[in-house]
Image 1 (tube, helix red, strand yellow):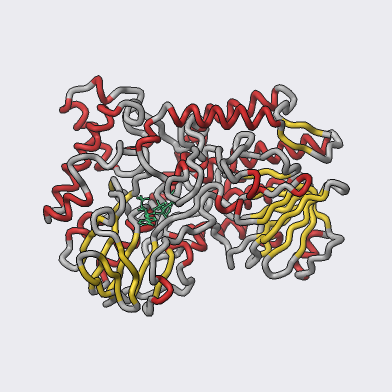
Image 2 (cartoon, protein in one colour; image 1 turned 90 degrees about the horizontal axis):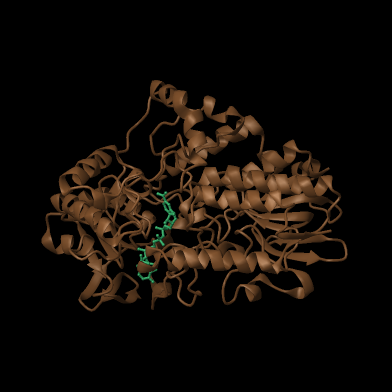
Length: 544
Ligand code: N01
C-alpha cells in the first residue's frame, strides 16, 4: 500500500507507515533498504531534489570526499563488487553517480519522496503514531520515525551588515545552484576556510580574476594525493575490500586504519619525521586518525606534527605575509582537534598573485556593499561572494523540524540549553523516534557509511525486536540519557578537543550551548555500549 501511494504521489492520512525516515543520505537509505528486507513498510522523505544526501546540496566547485571511495561506500549486499570509482577521492558528482548505481541495484527511489522538507512531526499518544507534515503540504502518518538528516543539514549564515544589499551573486556552499556557477574571470570573495572553503578556493584560484579569502582559523590541511583510477586499479582494491570493511568496526573513527600503536614522544625527531614523510607521501586522513596514538592526547607530541606540517607549508607559501596567516609559528590550536581538510593545491593557490588571504580576526568585515566588502583596510571589489561558513551541526538539522512529543513538549524546548540523548539515538519525551548520525553519536568522528551501516543495523534490529514482541511504544529512560550526556561531557572535558573552537561542540554558532555533540570515545567503545544495552534486554528503554 505504501509503495502504491508513493508511485501515485498520493499521501492519504489513512496510509500509516511502519517507519517514516526523514533524510535520504547514506544512513536513511541503508535503513530503508534493511527495513524493507524485514517486511516493514517504510518511506523516505528528503528535501533534496535527487539522490546524494549531503552531496546533492554541496555541489560547489571542488566539492569532494575526504575519504577514499573504497571506504566511503556501502559494504552490504556486495554492492562494492561492481562499482568502479573514477577517482581515489570522488567528487560530489562521483558520489551522486555512486548513489544512482546503488539505486539501480536496490530500487530505493521507489520509496523516496524528493523535494519534501519535513516541516513538523507531531506525536499522538492515543494512537501511538507520528504525523509528519512537509513544507509543501504532504502529510504522512507512521508508527515510528527515524530522523537521518545528517550532521550538516542546516547551513550557517554569517551575520553581516549589508549582506542583503549585495548586488553580485552570493551563495552558501551548501546551497550552491545545481546548475553550477562559472567563476571564470570573476572577483571572488570566499568567507571561511573549513573543508568547503579550502575546496572552493582551490578551484576559484585557477579561474577567477581575483580571489580574496577571509580566514578566521587556519586550516591545518594535509595532502590528499588524489589520483584517477582505472578499472584495473578498482579490481586491485576490491581484492582487499572485505578485510578493509571488517577493520572499520575496530578502528576509532570507523576507517580501515587506526592510530599507530606507538607514541611520537618515544621517538627521536629523525625517526618521527621519517614516519611523517611517509604519511605525507601517501596522503589522506591516516595523518590525522592514523597518526601516532599520542597525537590527540599529548600536546608536546602534537606539536611535533604541527612543526612538521608548518615546514611543509612554508615550502609552498613563500610570501611571508600569507605564510604568517595560513601557517603561523604558534599553532592556532593543537593539530587535529579541529577537522583538518585534505588539500590538493590549496597552499600553492594561496601563494598565487591573484589570491589574497585576510585574517578576519585582525581585519574583520565591516559591512557588505553592493559591489564589494568593506574592511578597516578599504573596500575589496567582489561580484561573487561565497559563504563557506559551515553549519549548525549535529543538532541543527533535527531542530529545524518542529517536533512535538509527549504532552506538547517540543524538541526546541527540550534541547534549549543542551542536547540530551541516549547514545545519540533517541531522546526522552519523543517516543518511537530514533536518530541516525545524531548528536552525541560518533558522527563527527566516524566515516559516514560505517556509521550508516552499523548504527542502521542496530536500529533496525531494535525495531524488529519490538515488533516481534508486540511492543508498540518505546522511549529511552531518563537515567540512560543523563548517563550518556555525563559520559560524553566527561570524555570531552578530559580531551584536547576543548582547545579549539569547533563545530564539534557548537562553538561555531553564536548563542548555541557549548556542549560536546560528537562522541569522542571511538566507534568500538560506542558499539560495545550498545551491545551491553541489548544484552540487558534493551534496559535503556521503557517499552510497552
Ligand atoms: O564548515 P566549517 P565546512 N565569521 O564549519 C568560518 C564536512 N565537510 O562546510 O574555523 C568568520 O568547517 C569558520 O571559521 P572558524 C566536514 O566534516 C566535508 O567547511 O569557526 N568566519 C570556518 O573557517 C566538515 O568539518 C567535506 O573560526 C566564519 C568556516 O567558516 C564539515 O562538513 C567538505 C564565520 C566554516 O567551516 C563542515 O565543513 C565539506 C563568521 N561569522 C564539508 N562563521 C569533505 O569531505 C563561520 N566562519 C571534503
